[in-house]
Amino acid sequence: MNNNLNCLQPTDQTIILKSRTPAHNFISMSVGKPKRPATNLGPDSLFVHVYDIFIDENILETMVLHTNAKIQEVQLKYKSFKRTHLSRTIGRSTFINLTNINEVCALIGLLYLAGLYKSNHENLSSLWTSDGTGRDIFRCTMTLSRFKFLSCLRFDDANTRRARANDNKLAAISDIFSAWISNCQNNYSPGPILTVDKMYMPKKPARYGLKIVILNDSKTHYMVNAEIYCGKTSDRPRAKNDNNLLPTRSCSPLDTSS
Image 1: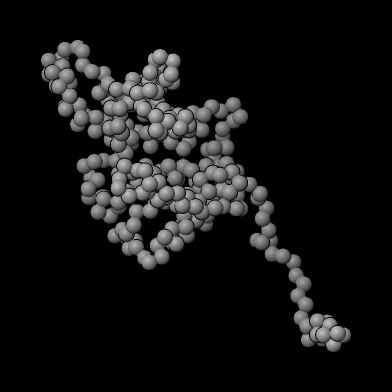
Image 2: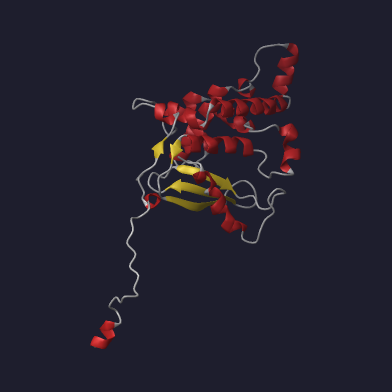
């Protein structure tokens, strides 16, 4: 028994290393924190002020520009517009008018509320009913006809989309999506613990599901980065383990985070 214990005792040849833990191995920040311009928001800031730093004026102006281009194209399909536009008479349907930044913000707000109320399976007209079963905020914001017509919402130049789609399958939304992700990264410094997860959305209008890889702060659940998986592209051919490379690419902003 003693002989077995002797082998565990240190000998003259045993090297015992004693050194201080390097400073870079210490985690000094426990949670993430806002960065400018988010730090300029005071305790009395309204939701709209927070909204403005993520969906900024440049994003909204781009949406209004391309949405109005689509509306002008669709307007000609309405007989009432053709008749009144040529004769300059009154009575043209107002729900086919051009849009503006305020209305686009209102539309996004209604879509957000519809999700908050879990109304994705609810009949759309029921949200606008005035018999007490609907939700007044929808009816007070815009008419149901206008809400449906704003399916004309666009995020890019339709005239150049086909050429851009050859190199970018997300050409219809990539510019707006990238600008939004940049705003998310510019307004927050993530904490030391983050999580990469994949979100699969099988109910999108297209035939196949939409997969999004998201990098979140594990403590605050703040989204630091996101990438929509779109398969093989001309600038980045798909590799056998491309699904495994997605989380690695989503962590790339951490190299410059402060």
